[in-house]
Length: 202
Image 1 (tube, rainbow, N blue to C red):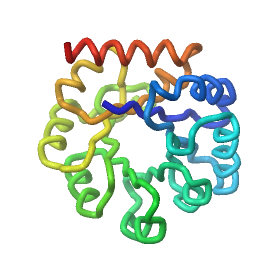
Image 2 (cartoon, one colour; image 1 turned 180 degrees about the vertical axis):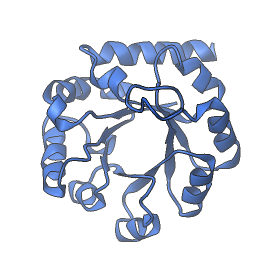
Image 3 (tube, helix red, strand yellow; image 1 turned 90 degrees about the vertical axis):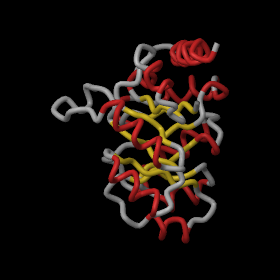
Image 4 (cartoon, rainbow, N blue to C red; image 1 turned 135 degrees about the vertical axis):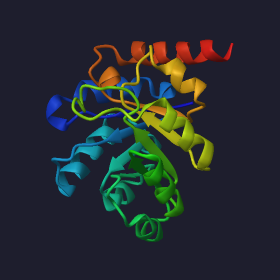
């Protein structure tokens, strides 16, 4: 199971997080740099800082800006669910992995047809970041997993407590924001997630 870490906004702080993440890169698979308020130029600078602080380029996904991801030679780009030009991105930037955020079974099937490499599906459980939007739930996650052939990463309310339900749904990975990004000791949180995941397979 892959572990994807979703960044907070840049103004929420990041130097401590980058430093800790650089020291425990064996414990996660992808760091998504996501801040919708940033311009392309600011995203380039922010991602450059992550690289300078020691995070490997193949651990980094840039949200929304495929040209920034390509210029920095990072793993790939994550596109919002409303982004329709997946094929254009893949044609113009063939070296990038292209992930897409989706919120329903219908969107998941459509983005698979448009050749997304993987999906981030959510929000699965209730989460403070979406207080007035009902979660899609485990049933939708299972339905998507049963019918698409590309990896599905679950997001929304992912914690050590909810992880067993996601593993039973045979999810390909989990995406975590506040649980990790706001933790004082990121490595400890990642260790707990790994331990819970290992327990499920014993």
